Image (cartoon, rainbow, N blue to C red):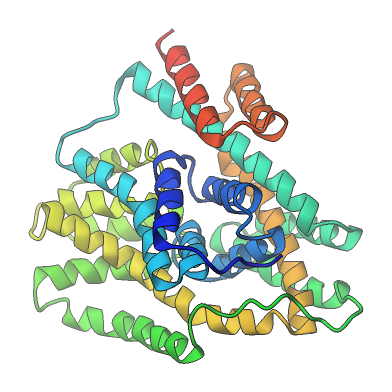
Length: 396
């Protein structure tokens, strides 16, 4: 089975709203939650189709997990499904971040810090489950297992965005050399959810805004705010923490808020479910220069997500057209194997290294992993249990 293409926007919204309320741990953990929900539980995708989407979004600028979610909604229920997926996954943490900016919430004290640490341990269990499941499906032979290991080495050698892109490129090259399979190359039909013409339009709009917004930024403060966040979203691969230097330059560097306000919001963002890019809503709301408040949050939030979603829409029609080509299939086998390596290294750093600080932490993360893999408990139960245990440990 490839992709099941029939569904409703309401169904998509409900699934992603649940994830938006419970998906803690950052973009790598989100990919694990998505796999559990849409591959394992709902069967909307198989591992190969899901791996294709992950590999594509690793190539593109923008928030990778949100792009994957947007594409899932688009393929399931068309444009309304895409909008429903984005809103459902993004809105909960965006509203919470605006509340923090307006002074309605704060994360302080032993209890709150303990709960936050428990949520980090959830991420360890979720990502480990995702790596195990994807490795079984996407690295079933020696060649692809070797590609995954070499992808890890490429990440270690180059680091950061360059390491991530190098790992995927290496996977593509080795896939072409080592992963050719006999047969006619046919795959189950998976029509692109948008036309090539609309994909080209989206690409031109992406480029046009990137060029035009800096020229229009002096017209009024709203356009200047939109420009700062649009460029941040357009120039970052993988999303998450990598976007922070660009956001700091676009806000603190322009005198919109102080360093302490910026860092306080970043700390609060670590406790939120959903995409880290909703930190933009906090920054827009907390800005000392209008537009700020709710209006500033809305501008910043739309602006930071828009470029990544536009470039995804531009790529999807051509990406799926290539999936039936035998050479493209071989390249994707290699790329998917490399994705397993990328996820495996991310499981170690930053997920494991930032969360497992003691033998007790390791025991709790292991318990969460066993609960997900062997006991098949719903992720929400594991999130609630480890957050509660973390809170108790924090106050002892």
